[in-house]
Length: 116
Image 1 (cartoon, rainbow, N blue to C red):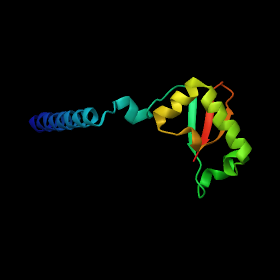
Image 2 (image 1 turned 180 degrees about the vertical axis):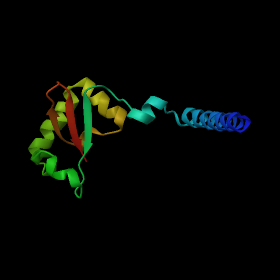
Image 3 (image 1 turned 30 degrees about the horizontal axis):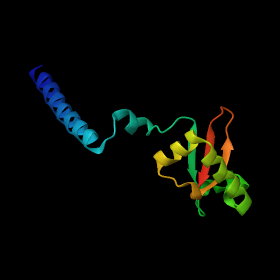
């Protein structure tokens, strides 16, 4: 019985030391546990997708994002500059408006932004 109690106390001390170190790391990095587990939340209802030439998901992107024309890019960039909440969401993510390839409206009213 004493060995079981000793093992439990040692395990609790070890876990307590790890959580204190993890809390220090989280505070130093500026991330909360919620952001680590569920991702960083930016402005709501905006999803930004980076379009890469060699991506496996490339076949799921709209054709305007894969093969953008000058006209489609101008329309998408105009949509970004006209919508203040959309431009604020992209600014938080560090995406410049001239890198936007295509903007779609989702069924829930949110925006899906494809960028390079």
